Length: 264
Image 1: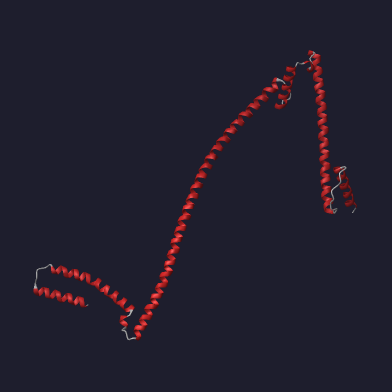
Image 2: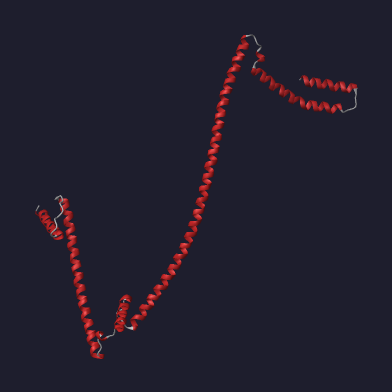
């Protein structure tokens, strides 16, 4: 319990420090929110401590740089009686350009021995970057070509799909029409079948011979067609004898044989 109260007090102090004179937003005080806010306050405290350390380090480095610059300036004055304040406007610009170049190239000093390797490294990086750019351009051109081909193929496929859909619609209409005709023909067939059956029953009641019914007539027609088919080779055989010289006795024998075959 005391630990929870201590956390709540630390959270309240931290929020007051963060918001200052501004009012602290209302929030529900419970163990969960207190734990979350306490965790954030601890992280904020660690971050503030790290930032303070970085600031102190930068201040120390700035002080060291200033001391080194003053030492070099004093050394320059003692050796050649030269001061940057005595430079002309152009000299000051050149000196600033030299300093800016050293900073941009990240050299340890502004000597020629430091500048040449830095410039060489920068030139190598430039060539590598140009080479990489060329590779990217080639790859981009290849991708554009593939994209164009893909778009053309997509357009062709869309046109083929439209044609297929139109053809399918036409065929579907034809199928629907045929189905309607089939249904109509089925209905008519049933109508005719019932009509034929009714007529046969009516004729049967009036004493009509069963051999004259529709089915019997169809069967007789099929039998007649079969007999005609069987007589075709016999007729051809008979025609071959008609071309021979007449011989009454032989002709009579052949005629009798043909008659017997026809009766069979």
